[in-house]
Image 1 (tube, rainbow, N blue to C red):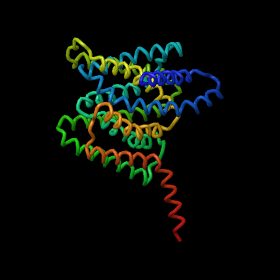
Image 2 (cartoon, rainbow, N blue to C red):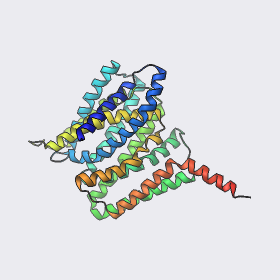
Image 3 (cartoon, rainbow, N blue to C red):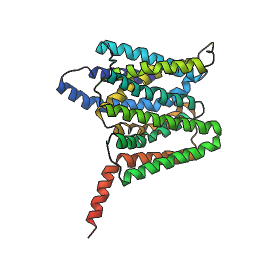
Length: 333
Protein backbone atom coordinates (compact mmCIF):
# COMPACT_ATOMS: atom_id res chain seq x y z
CA UNK A 1 0.00 0.00 0.00
CA UNK A 2 2.77 2.42 0.99
CA UNK A 3 4.74 1.77 -2.21
CA UNK A 4 1.58 2.15 -4.31
CA UNK A 5 1.05 5.62 -2.84
CA UNK A 6 4.70 6.55 -3.46
CA UNK A 7 4.51 5.28 -7.07
CA UNK A 8 1.35 7.33 -7.66
CA UNK A 9 3.02 10.44 -6.23
CA UNK A 10 6.03 9.99 -8.52
CA UNK A 11 3.89 9.50 -11.65
CA UNK A 12 1.72 12.52 -10.87
CA UNK A 13 4.78 14.60 -10.07
CA UNK A 14 6.32 13.71 -13.42
CA UNK A 15 3.02 14.74 -15.07
CA UNK A 16 3.32 18.15 -13.40
CA UNK A 17 6.92 18.41 -14.60
CA UNK A 18 5.94 17.44 -18.14
CA UNK A 19 3.15 20.04 -18.19
CA UNK A 20 5.74 22.82 -18.13
CA UNK A 21 6.81 21.90 -21.66
CA UNK A 22 3.44 21.53 -23.37
CA UNK A 23 2.92 24.36 -25.79
CA UNK A 24 -0.74 24.56 -26.69
CA UNK A 25 -2.44 27.36 -24.75
CA UNK A 26 -5.78 25.53 -24.55
CA UNK A 27 -4.08 22.33 -23.41
CA UNK A 28 -2.19 24.27 -20.76
CA UNK A 29 -5.43 25.82 -19.53
CA UNK A 30 -7.08 22.41 -19.20
CA UNK A 31 -3.96 20.88 -17.65
CA UNK A 32 -3.71 23.68 -15.10
CA UNK A 33 -7.33 23.18 -14.04
CA UNK A 34 -6.54 19.52 -13.37
CA UNK A 35 -2.95 19.74 -12.16
CA UNK A 36 -3.34 22.62 -9.70
CA UNK A 37 -5.62 20.69 -7.28
CA UNK A 38 -3.57 17.50 -7.83
CA UNK A 39 -0.32 19.32 -7.10
CA UNK A 40 -1.94 21.00 -4.10
CA UNK A 41 -2.93 17.59 -2.68
CA UNK A 42 0.49 16.12 -3.35
CA UNK A 43 2.35 18.93 -1.63
CA UNK A 44 0.01 18.57 1.35
CA UNK A 45 0.77 14.84 1.68
CA UNK A 46 4.50 15.28 1.11
CA UNK A 47 4.80 18.12 3.62
CA UNK A 48 2.79 16.17 6.20
CA UNK A 49 5.13 13.17 5.95
CA UNK A 50 8.38 15.15 5.64
CA UNK A 51 8.90 16.03 9.36
CA UNK A 52 8.70 12.39 10.46
CA UNK A 53 10.92 11.13 7.63
CA UNK A 54 13.44 13.86 8.51
CA UNK A 55 13.50 12.48 12.05
CA UNK A 56 13.86 8.91 10.73
CA UNK A 57 16.69 9.96 8.39
CA UNK A 58 18.75 10.86 11.47
CA UNK A 59 18.29 7.48 13.18
CA UNK A 60 21.79 6.02 13.58
CA UNK A 61 23.51 8.69 11.47
CA UNK A 62 24.31 12.38 11.93
CA UNK A 63 21.61 14.74 10.68
CA UNK A 64 24.14 16.51 8.40
CA UNK A 65 24.75 13.24 6.57
CA UNK A 66 21.01 12.85 6.08
CA UNK A 67 20.47 16.31 4.62
CA UNK A 68 23.66 16.16 2.52
CA UNK A 69 22.72 12.83 0.92
CA UNK A 70 19.12 13.94 0.46
CA UNK A 71 20.10 17.10 -1.38
CA UNK A 72 22.72 15.22 -3.40
CA UNK A 73 20.10 12.73 -4.62
CA UNK A 74 17.68 15.56 -5.32
CA UNK A 75 20.27 17.60 -7.24
CA UNK A 76 21.28 14.74 -9.54
CA UNK A 77 17.67 13.75 -10.25
CA UNK A 78 16.45 17.33 -10.78
CA UNK A 79 19.32 18.25 -13.13
CA UNK A 80 18.82 15.06 -15.19
CA UNK A 81 15.07 15.73 -15.51
CA UNK A 82 15.65 19.40 -16.39
CA UNK A 83 18.16 18.50 -19.10
CA UNK A 84 15.96 15.72 -20.52
CA UNK A 85 12.90 17.96 -20.71
CA UNK A 86 14.38 21.38 -21.47
CA UNK A 87 17.81 20.48 -22.93
CA UNK A 88 19.67 23.06 -20.85
CA UNK A 89 19.68 25.15 -17.67
CA UNK A 90 19.63 28.93 -17.88
CA UNK A 91 22.43 30.78 -16.08
CA UNK A 92 21.76 34.40 -17.02
CA UNK A 93 21.57 37.07 -14.33
CA UNK A 94 17.80 36.78 -13.85
CA UNK A 95 17.96 32.98 -13.62
CA UNK A 96 20.80 33.08 -11.09
CA UNK A 97 18.80 35.50 -8.96
CA UNK A 98 15.86 33.09 -9.06
CA UNK A 99 18.10 30.14 -8.16
CA UNK A 100 19.45 32.11 -5.20
CA UNK A 101 15.92 32.63 -3.89
CA UNK A 102 15.18 28.91 -4.21
CA UNK A 103 18.50 28.06 -2.54
CA UNK A 104 17.49 30.25 0.41
CA UNK A 105 14.46 28.03 1.02
CA UNK A 106 16.49 24.86 0.54
CA UNK A 107 19.53 25.72 2.66
CA UNK A 108 18.46 28.29 5.23
CA UNK A 109 14.95 26.85 5.46
CA UNK A 110 15.94 23.18 5.72
CA UNK A 111 19.10 23.13 7.83
CA UNK A 112 17.46 24.51 11.02
CA UNK A 113 14.64 21.96 10.68
CA UNK A 114 17.06 19.03 10.45
CA UNK A 115 18.93 20.29 13.50
CA UNK A 116 15.68 20.82 15.43
CA UNK A 117 14.33 17.36 14.52
CA UNK A 118 16.81 15.87 17.00
CA UNK A 119 14.78 17.25 19.91
CA UNK A 120 11.41 18.48 18.55
CA UNK A 121 8.61 16.10 17.58
CA UNK A 122 7.69 15.82 13.90
CA UNK A 123 4.10 16.95 14.52
CA UNK A 124 5.21 20.08 16.36
CA UNK A 125 7.53 21.01 13.49
CA UNK A 126 4.56 20.93 11.14
CA UNK A 127 2.41 22.94 13.58
CA UNK A 128 5.03 25.70 13.78
CA UNK A 129 5.26 25.72 9.98
CA UNK A 130 1.52 26.39 10.13
CA UNK A 131 2.19 30.10 10.68
CA UNK A 132 3.79 30.26 7.21
CA UNK A 133 0.63 31.69 5.55
CA UNK A 134 0.51 34.52 8.07
CA UNK A 135 4.17 35.46 7.69
CA UNK A 136 4.04 34.97 3.92
CA UNK A 137 0.86 37.03 3.67
CA UNK A 138 2.37 39.87 5.67
CA UNK A 139 5.59 39.90 3.62
CA UNK A 140 3.63 39.66 0.34
CA UNK A 141 1.47 42.62 1.43
CA UNK A 142 4.47 44.61 2.64
CA UNK A 143 6.84 44.07 -0.28
CA UNK A 144 4.88 43.02 -3.38
CA UNK A 145 1.46 44.52 -2.52
CA UNK A 146 -0.34 41.20 -3.11
CA UNK A 147 -3.17 41.55 -0.58
CA UNK A 148 -4.12 44.06 2.09
CA UNK A 149 -4.58 43.44 5.81
CA UNK A 150 -7.91 44.06 7.49
CA UNK A 151 -9.13 43.64 11.05
CA UNK A 152 -9.98 39.95 10.64
CA UNK A 153 -6.56 39.15 9.17
CA UNK A 154 -4.84 41.05 11.96
CA UNK A 155 -6.88 39.01 14.45
CA UNK A 156 -5.69 35.87 12.67
CA UNK A 157 -2.08 37.04 12.93
CA UNK A 158 -2.49 37.65 16.66
CA UNK A 159 -4.08 34.21 17.08
CA UNK A 160 -1.16 32.56 15.29
CA UNK A 161 1.30 34.51 17.43
CA UNK A 162 -0.56 33.41 20.57
CA UNK A 163 -0.30 29.82 19.36
CA UNK A 164 3.47 30.12 18.99
CA UNK A 165 3.72 31.65 22.47
CA UNK A 166 1.74 28.72 23.89
CA UNK A 167 4.10 26.27 22.19
CA UNK A 168 7.15 28.16 23.48
CA UNK A 169 5.73 28.13 27.02
CA UNK A 170 5.30 24.38 26.79
CA UNK A 171 8.81 23.94 25.37
CA UNK A 172 10.40 25.63 28.41
CA UNK A 173 9.21 22.66 30.49
CA UNK A 174 11.03 20.25 28.13
CA UNK A 175 14.53 21.71 28.58
CA UNK A 176 16.85 24.20 26.90
CA UNK A 177 17.50 21.96 23.89
CA UNK A 178 13.79 21.79 23.13
CA UNK A 179 13.47 25.58 23.33
CA UNK A 180 16.37 26.04 20.91
CA UNK A 181 14.79 23.47 18.60
CA UNK A 182 11.48 25.33 18.53
CA UNK A 183 13.33 28.62 17.90
CA UNK A 184 15.23 27.00 15.01
CA UNK A 185 11.98 25.88 13.36
CA UNK A 186 10.52 29.39 13.72
CA UNK A 187 13.65 30.77 12.02
CA UNK A 188 13.21 28.25 9.20
CA UNK A 189 9.58 29.35 8.75
CA UNK A 190 10.60 33.00 8.44
CA UNK A 191 13.35 32.24 5.90
CA UNK A 192 11.02 29.98 3.90
CA UNK A 193 8.42 32.75 3.76
CA UNK A 194 11.03 35.29 2.65
CA UNK A 195 12.08 32.93 -0.14
CA UNK A 196 8.48 32.39 -1.31
CA UNK A 197 7.75 36.11 -1.56
CA UNK A 198 11.12 36.80 -3.19
CA UNK A 199 10.38 34.18 -5.87
CA UNK A 200 6.85 35.50 -6.36
CA UNK A 201 8.16 39.07 -6.77
CA UNK A 202 10.29 38.05 -9.77
CA UNK A 203 7.22 36.93 -11.76
CA UNK A 204 9.31 34.35 -13.59
CA UNK A 205 7.88 31.97 -16.18
CA UNK A 206 10.76 29.52 -15.74
CA UNK A 207 9.59 25.88 -15.58
CA UNK A 208 9.40 24.55 -12.04
CA UNK A 209 11.86 21.68 -12.61
CA UNK A 210 14.50 24.17 -13.81
CA UNK A 211 13.91 26.33 -10.73
CA UNK A 212 14.41 23.33 -8.45
CA UNK A 213 17.47 22.06 -10.34
CA UNK A 214 19.13 25.48 -10.32
CA UNK A 215 18.26 26.10 -6.68
CA UNK A 216 19.71 22.73 -5.66
CA UNK A 217 22.90 23.42 -7.63
CA UNK A 218 23.28 26.75 -5.82
CA UNK A 219 22.52 25.22 -2.41
CA UNK A 220 24.71 22.10 -2.69
CA UNK A 221 28.09 23.88 -2.15
CA UNK A 222 26.69 25.37 1.07
CA UNK A 223 25.49 21.96 2.31
CA UNK A 224 28.84 20.41 1.35
CA UNK A 225 30.80 23.09 3.21
CA UNK A 226 28.72 22.68 6.38
CA UNK A 227 29.02 18.89 6.18
CA UNK A 228 32.81 18.90 5.72
CA UNK A 229 33.33 21.36 8.58
CA UNK A 230 30.87 20.11 11.21
CA UNK A 231 29.88 16.49 10.47
CA UNK A 232 31.51 13.67 12.49
CA UNK A 233 32.98 10.54 10.80
CA UNK A 234 30.41 8.38 9.03
CA UNK A 235 29.13 5.30 10.85
CA UNK A 236 30.13 1.84 9.59
CA UNK A 237 26.56 0.68 8.98
CA UNK A 238 23.71 2.96 7.90
CA UNK A 239 20.35 1.76 9.28
CA UNK A 240 17.95 0.72 6.52
CA UNK A 241 15.16 2.89 7.94
CA UNK A 242 17.39 5.97 7.79
CA UNK A 243 18.58 5.14 4.27
CA UNK A 244 15.07 4.70 2.85
CA UNK A 245 13.94 7.89 4.58
CA UNK A 246 16.81 9.79 2.95
CA UNK A 247 15.94 8.34 -0.47
CA UNK A 248 12.27 9.28 0.01
CA UNK A 249 13.22 12.82 0.98
CA UNK A 250 15.70 13.11 -1.90
CA UNK A 251 13.30 11.92 -4.60
CA UNK A 252 9.86 12.90 -3.29
CA UNK A 253 10.64 15.73 -0.88
CA UNK A 254 13.38 17.55 -2.78
CA UNK A 255 12.24 17.04 -6.38
CA UNK A 256 8.57 16.06 -6.72
CA UNK A 257 7.48 18.14 -3.71
CA UNK A 258 9.38 21.28 -4.63
CA UNK A 259 8.46 21.05 -8.33
CA UNK A 260 4.78 20.87 -7.37
CA UNK A 261 5.24 23.66 -4.82
CA UNK A 262 6.86 26.08 -7.28
CA UNK A 263 4.33 25.05 -9.93
CA UNK A 264 1.59 26.17 -7.54
CA UNK A 265 3.52 29.31 -6.63
CA UNK A 266 3.54 30.30 -10.31
CA UNK A 267 -0.22 29.82 -10.73
CA UNK A 268 -1.63 30.87 -7.34
CA UNK A 269 -1.07 33.75 -4.89
CA UNK A 270 1.74 33.04 -2.41
CA UNK A 271 -0.63 33.28 0.55
CA UNK A 272 -3.01 30.76 -1.05
CA UNK A 273 -0.19 28.28 -1.64
CA UNK A 274 0.80 28.70 2.00
CA UNK A 275 -2.73 27.54 2.92
CA UNK A 276 -1.36 24.00 2.52
CA UNK A 277 0.09 24.41 5.98
CA UNK A 278 -3.47 24.74 7.34
CA UNK A 279 -3.94 21.03 6.66
CA UNK A 280 -0.48 19.56 7.21
CA UNK A 281 -0.20 20.18 11.00
CA UNK A 282 -3.21 17.97 11.76
CA UNK A 283 -2.00 15.26 9.37
CA UNK A 284 1.56 15.43 10.72
CA UNK A 285 0.41 15.18 14.35
CA UNK A 286 -1.67 12.13 13.46
CA UNK A 287 1.18 10.52 11.48
CA UNK A 288 3.65 11.15 14.32
CA UNK A 289 1.24 9.62 16.83
CA UNK A 290 0.49 6.52 14.72
CA UNK A 291 3.99 5.71 13.44
CA UNK A 292 6.25 7.09 16.21
CA UNK A 293 3.94 7.24 19.26
CA UNK A 294 4.71 10.94 19.69
CA UNK A 295 2.88 12.47 22.63
CA UNK A 296 1.23 15.88 22.36
CA UNK A 297 1.25 18.15 25.42
CA UNK A 298 -1.64 20.40 26.46
CA UNK A 299 0.32 23.50 25.39
CA UNK A 300 0.83 22.04 21.93
CA UNK A 301 -2.90 21.25 21.65
CA UNK A 302 -3.76 24.84 22.60
CA UNK A 303 -1.06 26.22 20.32
CA UNK A 304 -2.26 24.08 17.42
CA UNK A 305 -5.86 25.28 17.79
CA UNK A 306 -4.72 28.91 17.96
CA UNK A 307 -2.42 28.53 14.94
CA UNK A 308 -5.12 26.83 12.84
CA UNK A 309 -7.67 29.46 13.91
CA UNK A 310 -5.24 32.19 12.98
CA UNK A 311 -4.60 30.68 9.57
CA UNK A 312 -8.32 30.30 8.90
CA UNK A 313 -9.00 33.93 9.87
CA UNK A 314 -6.08 35.09 7.77
CA UNK A 315 -7.07 33.07 4.72
CA UNK A 316 -10.75 34.06 4.75
CA UNK A 317 -10.22 37.50 6.24
CA UNK A 318 -11.45 39.38 3.17
CA UNK A 319 -14.63 37.29 2.91
CA UNK A 320 -15.44 37.57 6.62
CA UNK A 321 -14.66 41.28 6.64
CA UNK A 322 -17.10 41.90 3.78
CA UNK A 323 -19.81 39.85 5.51
CA UNK A 324 -19.35 41.76 8.76
CA UNK A 325 -19.38 45.08 6.91
CA UNK A 326 -22.63 44.19 5.13
CA UNK A 327 -24.30 43.23 8.40
CA UNK A 328 -23.07 46.42 10.00
CA UNK A 329 -24.58 48.49 7.18
CA UNK A 330 -27.81 46.47 7.32
CA UNK A 331 -28.41 47.12 11.02
CA UNK A 332 -27.17 50.71 11.06
CA UNK A 333 -29.63 53.57 10.68
